[in-house]
Length: 153
Image 1: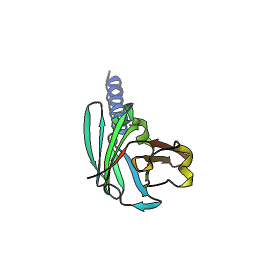
Image 2: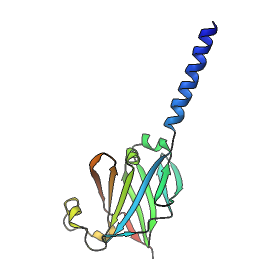
Image 3: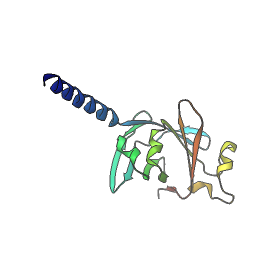
Image 4: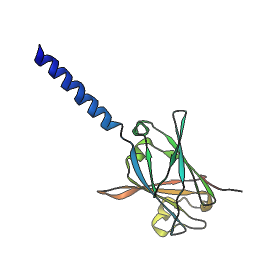
């Protein structure tokens, strides 16, 4: 009976450790490029999912999100970059598993490397590109979103 009790206690401890490991926040490195130049990123981002909103500070270009975000289908990400208010509505929860995000903004035209992602006739100033990258995965994935950028009045 003593061995059964020890086994049960060890099992509970292992399950608790495994579950604790799953709930570690995910760290994302955020870089912002505007008109081909690196530019300061936001001081904070706001994410919304499942009728829940969270404001997250961005420190030294990094932010942390709760691991539960990866289990939701759609997340809205909002941030203020310079005088632009960014609202990305096409972010999947699993996108937060990609460690490096580059938010690419342009006033008139994007660099040639992104032209394939932009539909003809698009008004570039109101669009955003997010490049998702992780170590060991090349090339990264590109998300183009229209009507995601407004200039503060």
